[in-house]
Image 1: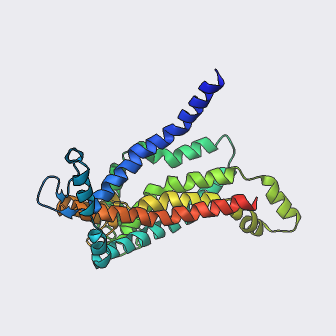
Image 2: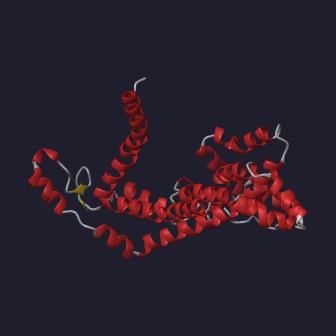
Image 3: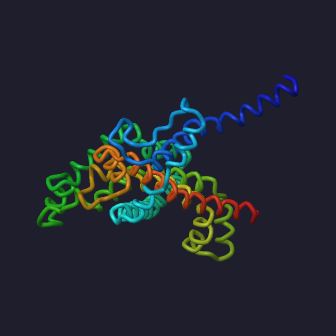
Length: 302
């Protein structure tokens, strides 16, 4: 292959991911952003103005001039939407914290198990993915309801005297998110712990560190990138979660995913739902930027 052809092939290889992102992320984002700047209308589609390139540049200029940020001001001034954002972030953060507490020991145990056993243990972690996500969430309705498996088991053991009200609460939503995103926390943690050099622990022990001190001063810092990656993989989709709060949550569970759906499908307000979706993206950019900044600092320190 000639040098010229190699150069073209290399450029195409680099261009394909950018073209993919432009077609399936940037373009849809621009469409949603444009709708968020429009006004509601009793029409099809239910907003104005509607972009029409056949009318010429003058019409296009008038079309752009008619766009405004009124929907964003309305969303940020309405307590219902602000409360939905706050509750989404709080529940997602709580579920992520629980996932770190539960997932770290599991990932640590898999990383320290015999090599021949690790693939089987990892398979058990990702096994729920072989079942439909919707069916798995529906199963928790039968577990958490008043007549469900959990209450019946606790009543049989004498732990409680009357059924607990778990279903249709925020507790049920957190339980559903912890269960659903558990593999997304374990796998990055396992990848970080499995790559750790055991000689670091031996060196810590030679220097007089106890196993607990070696864990906190060596294992935890080494696995920190896995913790951050797992937290982002869980927190970001949990903030915009719709299925879990819709099936397991109650009327008090006003997560932003449910709010977007209600505005889009029930109220037929595409403009407000688009503005909410754009604001979700902006909220989720904050932890992503923080993570990128941490990675840059780590690379600079090396």
